[in-house]
Length: 227
Length: 227
DNA sequence: ACCTGAACACCGTTCAAGT
DNA sequence: ACCTGAACACCGTTCAAGT
Image (cartoon, rainbow over all chains, first blue to last red; front, side):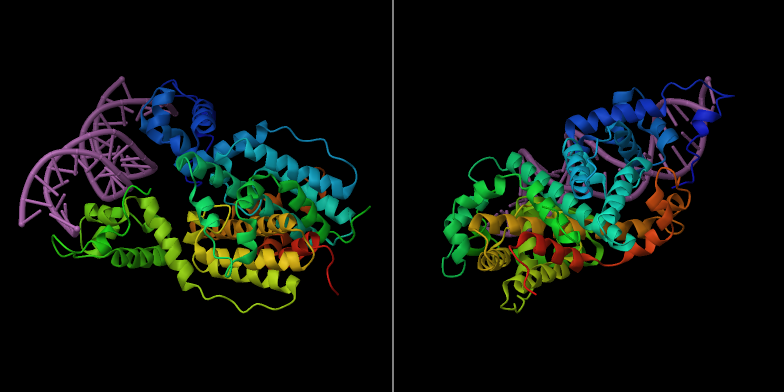
């Protein structure tokens, strides 16, 4: 992972051949691919083509495909503007997570990469700090505040993940939808409530309920919910 | 998807050559691979070897790798025993989701496959039905009960996903951990609370806080929490 | 220091053919 | 009906070499 000095190609510009590509070129091209076509479109070979070199040249700048993904994440983090946050602690927490979920939803590839129990980059820590601060202000201990942050992060990652893969599913299997058929032929003895819901299930689960769930979770986590 | 009649190889046993493998053989072998080595270990070629045929023979039984994954999910769903559920609605909801999260955590490959906004198989609907029923009993409208189920499912999927990828990260990058280093060198001006937490962050986030978050979420979602 | 070509060890899937 | 062999169009990465 840290075998390759990340700055070697930047600092040590003294001798040798002039570089034809830079790490920034690579990251920019990778971002273009990934923003337009999702993570599946990003291969080392394809990226090399886009950037105008051979696949092998890339390994001079990134050591690994995984390392490239980390660079991508950092690049995005720098790009997302920080939100203005309200002073009421409860409202502030809600604003932080609504902001995060909106930001990440615009870049679906992020959810496929993420895989970390905290927002790793320096940029990401901004949101953690604000959440923990607000939770303490609202009356939690530091330890409870960390737990609060984690619960909210779990909920948010889950919502984005599921919403994303539901969207992808709808893309692939075009029309009638296995799920709808299933709900139409449900045994009312075994599943009385679901059978009663019937076709309404589809429309109900298509609604965006992130915010309501978020507020419920915050209410449950904070000592008291102000009027 | 439904291009291939799924029962053709089972029902139409009249003419032709006797089968050397069955779909059950295939699913069983795939389960072995995936339980032991995770989803990454499962390739059509590898599976064919394990089952004693060529990769192409598999396509007689499964049409697609994706179709195989669905069979895998259904196989697991049949295997998981249904839990005994308490009569108090709030406790019942908590029991349902604790059960689901325990079951899924034992089979990490499930989280990589999942990608659906409801537990698709008939088996999975058992848990949805119970949750919705309990939520209505607790005083929610059917619509609110569906939202309640979804919020809990988001939280649970997020928790499993993140916990899983944190575990995988710890496997790969062995020792000192980038995160810990970061928390050691945090600017206390910019991140006062996180800097104060310092090395405690690692131990705090290593704790299993699923249940506490679950209860908070249920409290926030249900009309009133009984004593 | 920067880049290339050839090669290794893989993928999922299609297609035409065999029994 | 069930299965095979060869092939297509890909992967990420290593290694030795070129300028």
